[in-house]
Length: 457
Image (tube, rainbow, N blue to C red; front, top):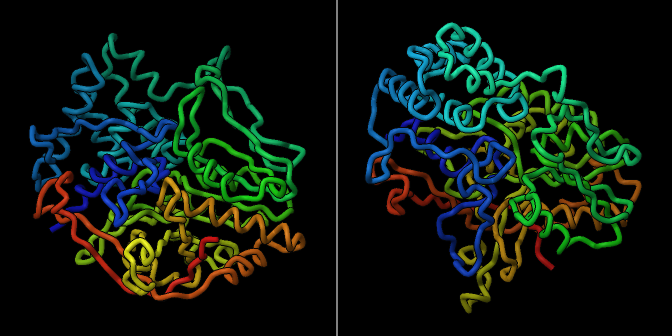
């Protein structure tokens, strides 16, 4: 039986709190192409290689088989003491217990949060308001147990801006274009990131993880895919660091805007927090077409147990149940036809779509999902790169129909698709069959669906 905590650990290894997770590191039908390594090790710290986790792993690399919450509590306490503290007897126990109480969750569900805080500190931006406040309260309630040698380090977990050199409001974006937001920025973090490309009339917003200096990150690769497929003279691309919610926050214009979202924020993959609802309310105030990447095949889920975390973005489940938000949202999966490669006629078996099915989410929302065909010679094949390809087509349509609203643009983009019977591939992890790194422990799930395909040109 798949245990929920195993999936939290799987998420920690594969996906991470700031989920620019349009990748699946296991083999795809065409090994000549590679998924973007957007989830190589997680990405909370504005980086697509997020916090490391060494939570009591055995020499063979398997997670221990634990059945009780009490043992998870002990593991978390020991982990925090060994990896963060030098003294402070009793503090780790107090903090873990207080955090469980403040978040009202099981100890097994705190693995991602504790690992993130120990390695990266805590911020509202990365943890979400509810979890951040829970961490603050837990730390404050255990302050009397902090030793002198640990005081500064614990204080820096949630560092408050001081009278000098603290956080200052910084406007990121282009205020004249109506694409901007204000960030309370600490100069110790370095230079804030914002960049615009092009000077065309169609505005495209992309928030992701971008590299600094010569480092190439997930967002750089996704941006390059957009630039490859979009008509150069027709758009202005505004890029920020963050997730889809950052893009919603940055739109301050009534013009029709295209959001290309291959990165999403979130912490607990099984909880839709208040932040997701607030993001959707913000989205509804805009005239934006939201192109939201779903997760790739094989990341999470067990069809027997019905355990499915949110599909790459917590706001996706909220939007699904909000008709006003759904009117200007399209979820993105990816698709390829291997008929020519295999030397046969196109058929339902050669037409393959790859996406995490998330229970019935995909089937329930087929009218609002587009399977974007990625050319076989494109370097990366995953949902992260399908999304900017869809955005590039939307740019073309909006250039041809400049008076179109976001809702109109959604209809225009759907009109570009063809309905085809496609073999949709997914997989789930069976912990009874092996460890997380054992390919034989992944069970294939195959469904034939009639889907909207945006055919490559």
